[in-house]
Image (cartoon, rainbow, N blue to C red; front, side, top):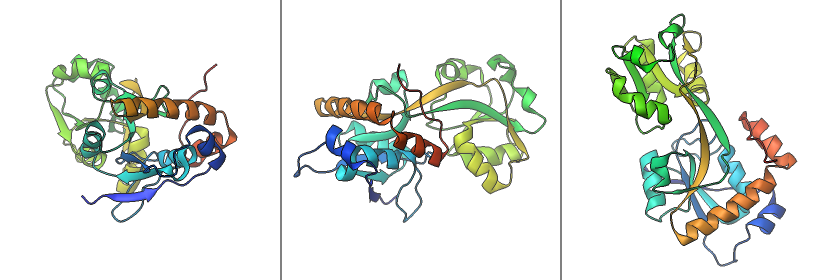
Length: 256
């Protein structure tokens, strides 16, 4: 897939200059990510957009370049030192071995099962009850520690490539449950005309928190510290409130 690039535009130039100033000769930071609805969205031939693009633009000004890539490639680029920032990964023990995470998340998702309307009761909260139930989940996604522990109990688990594939399988009765989150599912349900046919189950599987991630290197650690300081200041501003409102994403609570 060809790489698509865009300069993240500054919304708070004064903060970018104060908190994340870079030497005039320094190359721009490279921030990479994949399709996260409302967080980081890309289409063929178009510049990425979303909460993360605007957020990085407000913190770094013209000193960052955002690129839309397949998720596996984006992660690999960070780990190999070819990118400076990975946008939006959930923080997991396995990933912490490969990358550094921002102290604070910048969004959260409740991971849930989806079922056809009227059949939400298939999920009782107990994984053992799903041993013989055909279910699906997105390959490469993190679903939380409980899901990982209980995954061996899912005797008929199918991995799909994306949310659309999972919802189509659910709609065609090829599976009974599909694991995802509202932020990614709702736009696809609307596009597929399934918004009235599919509902979310409760309780949630887990609540996961999305971060900015950095390389496990001295440079990555320094950049993570700079980002953390600037993000903490920015989160208390009116610009932060407006940005989260604009993208329809719940903002994280500020520290005491």
